Image (cartoon, rainbow, N blue to C red; front, side):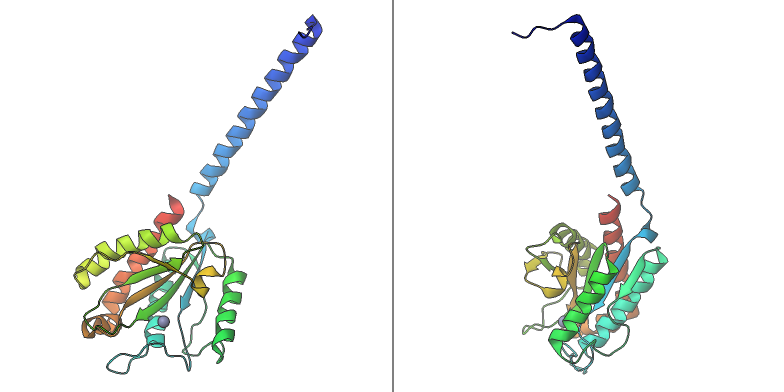
Length: 231
Ligand SMILES: [Zn+2]
């Protein structure tokens, strides 16, 4: 049994009041912080766009000799314009046809250095696919299966299925694929690779070279990015 004097009873009540008041203050601060995050301006967000390959590494090649590295660069430019028009800060890993280094390992390291320095909220790496079966079509999304990009990748794939693949290639059943992918592991923010279509399919190849397809796809990418940052 604990003996409580009148004086210590008053002190105990006072302590309880202080604790309750402090809890409310901390709670209020917590709510305030979350509100502040929810209303952060798009202009405060930096996104890295990585145009895959470049220089002597052309990536996959289409039936007409078009190189993946050139399609990636064009797509990256369209996405850059789209995001900048929405107010994003955009950092590109490359803006010319050249690689960052002629040695692949050093090229990838240079991309990582740019990504780390940019301290982005998301990384989007653009590529083009090739498959032995030339009937395979559509855009697919990949993420690091040990990282935090899974939700972003799944939302991206879902929207691409609905708004791009269903419209252009008649299929809407792709699922985002996890893997051990260097460019998606550079920083601890949602990082994805988008294979924008299959160069091994003649219709996809045409789409990849068309401005309207690039713009449609990039609009979807930008919208999903914005949703994921503002929800
Ligand atoms: Zn590639």
